[in-house]
Amino acid sequence: MHKKILVAVDGSAYSTNSLRYLGQLFKDVPEMDVHLLSIVSAAGTGSAAREWLSEEEMLNVVSPATRKALTAQKKYMLQAIETLKMLGVPETQVESSVSLSRLGIAEDILHLARQGRYDALLIGRRGVGKLEELIMGSVSATILEKCHDLPLWIIDGQVNSTRFLVPVDGSYHSLKAIDHLAFILAGNPHAEITLFYSKALLASRPEIDPADFETIWGRDWCATNLHRPDSLFHAPKQLLLDNGFPEERISWLETFKGIEPAQQILRQAVIDDFGTIVIGRRGPESKKGIFRGVSDRVLLMAEKVAVWIVG
Image 1: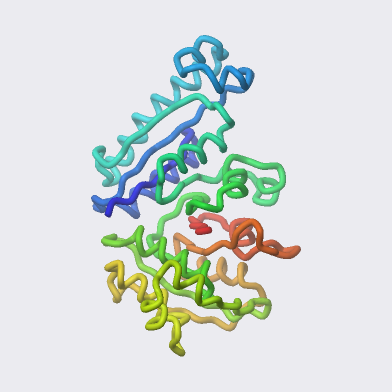
Image 2 (image 1 turned 45 degrees about the horizontal axis):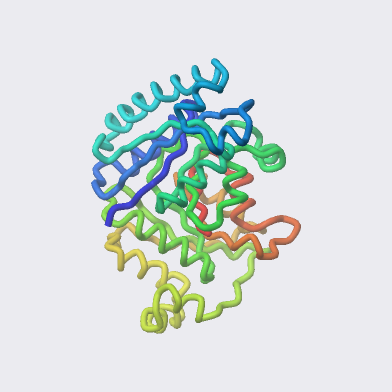
């Protein structure tokens, strides 16, 4: 089954990091389709015009600077496609589009991601302080806040490793993240996966409702794989195996160090050179407390690593 990834780019160095990430991870993977998307701000144009006018009509009312930016992005797209081609992702697996913003850049990206039924949305994080980014807002921070129905891949800096670190805790959200990973990496010849459990002092095992799991994976699968003494590791591993990921590239790591799960996850990523962290996220209705959820704190502190957030 083909996977469809929507990739938001803007011609910056952060977009280049995203292209390199895609190339090193998905070269020689014919089942992966990539859509490169660039949204050019039409600030200064009335909301009514952005909503009702066609793209051609909008070009007649936007500023010269906006038209220049649109031309630059179209030129960049040709370079981006060529870059992916050089990295091993053939042009036949890449499509692109450049358009003027109508609802706002973040909102337009989310609209297309949902309308196109993509399997994930990839965005590069701009080089501002992580705390300031979450407080003041940016395209990536806005998307993170508003998108809980689509897996987000957030790339921070240049990522050079194809090794995946996947924290597990036995929860529904943790297994959903594994399910997404298993689907995306089916047939991938490059990736290695380490399932990771930290007994950090502030970590706690979640309450489990079997009905949540059975809705997705079925009663028989759950009965076989979720009620074993080693289910914390066995169930995620089985999902990967069921999707054809080779057993020899799956490992297990458990640690007793650290006092806080997010810090321990990031520490382990640095120590063992993991390029991507895959983590489940609870919905916006969940009570996360003063320190926010683990996934939020991982993103807040992450540097030079990709973080996949699966809601």
